[in-house]
Image (cartoon, rainbow, N blue to C red):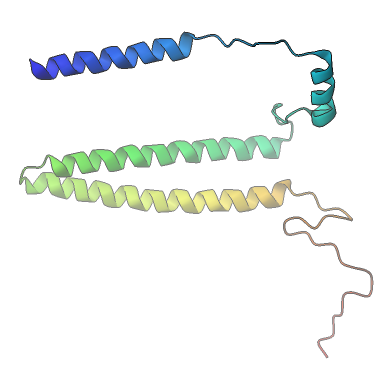
Length: 155
């Protein structure tokens, strides 16, 4: 009975907070004046804050892969929590402990694969999105200092 009462109170508080947060409307004390609009346009320029949809397919694919890898990381967290729950509730059952250990091992190997894939995607995206040019020194592309800066002879 006591547990049901606590559960009811917790659910009521969480529901109330959700209703307040999600249905609250923002209120501005002032509208944006013309001068503020001019200053914002001068700072952001024609590009704005850069929240437009990316138009480069390489950028879109890199973002999709990053999202998928993030979801896989979330799945790893859920598997780890589930394996920990199995282990803690085993109550001396060796078969359940073995299942939990196996699940933890497999989840850890999966995390290592996810981290390796994430670093590979980051590296490839950095190379694919970087644009070499005459003044580019970002990433892997380095502009030589001049025609005489390359010396093929080691002597």
